[in-house]
Length: 250
Image (cartoon, rainbow, N blue to C red; front, side, top):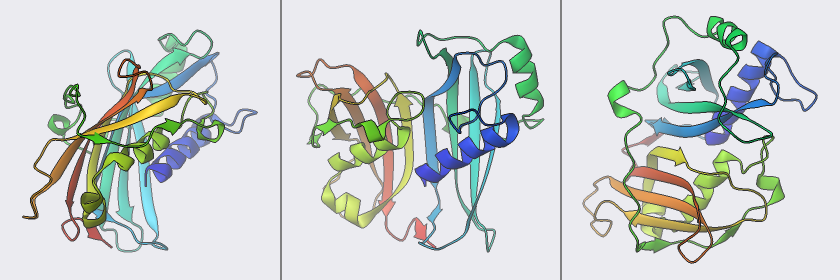
């Protein structure tokens, strides 16, 4: 599903602004400026099955003077049933200096004219941008060290966002991974990661994962560059899992 969100967002940008020589969206006036995600939240009420038709609607809005927001609304294309939603926060950086930059006013005005008015909100405001706990010094769950590959890179020169999620799941206990559905993931992107970096995959339970009473389970995750605990944190997330059957597979 995360891959679909990414693809739909990219296609939406191409439809609005046109395609650069790279094949990706290129807004006129964005010389050396690129959008990078700082936060993303995905919440699923039901999962489609292989072969199901899914409808994804996406739209964007200003989120303060320096940030933008892109949201997605996910439904079953055949029945219209609600499946889930996602929201994300983005900032603009200079692709050469990698420093935070403002959108030129002309670009910002043109961009705002293409966004819904009033803005569409897919998740309640009070349930987004919630602070993620500090990761404890001693991780209870340790996944394999990952070597970031060239094929994991995105067009902006850093690791594809979806890779982080797939790496983090390696630290989830087997009984949770097999017996639960991932209902929600809230993630913060902390630093850039590039091909060749070694990444430690760590997790920590926020609930009692040993019980079998059918309660939801939560985990805190971090990905950090290998360095004996001193490596830079790349990504942090909180995942919420519910027993299979409580999040339907349609």
